Image 1 (cartoon, rainbow, N blue to C red):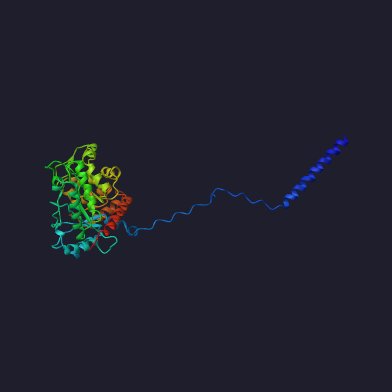
Image 2 (cartoon, rainbow, N blue to C red):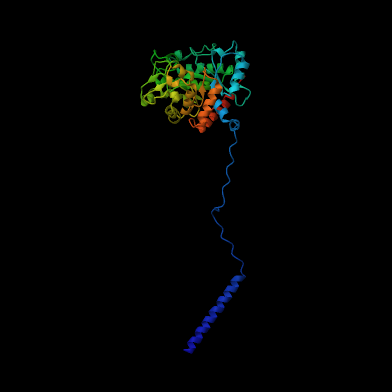
Length: 391
């Protein structure tokens, strides 16, 4: 028994000595390097991509007050042909553009070029828009335009529309105007309709073909506008003195009135003009004041450009008491989704109008983000117009 205990003690002693030696040898070795990770450290973050360079219009927008942005959404008019007076008028309010009417056209192209230059202003990179109704035929401001109008083009091959609008747009460009409200995308086969003489086609397809041709022919010469969305051809009434109303369904509109607008958008139209037209089965409000119609234009037709109203004074001239207040009309139009408000006549001082819109933004009736988006679209359009000026 004593012998077994002695052996056990010896074994334990040997093991203890061996362990001590192993620990001493291990202590003499340098520490092992930590394992190399094959995945990025959680504390490492990728470097952010450099921001895209700011465009000139972005730089200008960043410095604008709310009031200046609101003013930039107005296209105004005042009578007269004195270039200095007209330039001062549009400049003092900070408007984004001016629409040239017949009483703004002087005798002679050189004088008209002076008027246009004054209206565009001094900023060559971001000129104000100079709009004009130059459809040809019964609706023209430049009386030297003898090119074929819709009344004959609707009965001629599509190439005739291309030729007429290429020449018409070159004429508009030659006098310094930059935005032509000249392409009718309405369609009707009814000679009794208010708009019949001005439509480019009497069927959806013939109208669509000619609208697209007119847009493409104007490219590089003028900015183009399609009017009067969602379509004046469904009613015989005159929207200058009433709110024309039709009860057709949305599906009927999609089949009959949508194709010319869609064709023009696909062809590259810059601007859509909304009409003071009521499609009662779609919305009780006129399309110009309808968020639903603006949603259709943006989402269904895919339009990304500037949406402008028809002349806002037409709402008051309709005699409908609901539209007797010009400030309220402006607020409803911007809240619905228009980017610009067009005024040929204005029953109040433009400063009152601007103040009223600013108040509506401040109290939430118009979203600040919507004003920012609209101002951006208008500035982008103005920047594009700079490349069309040749004088």
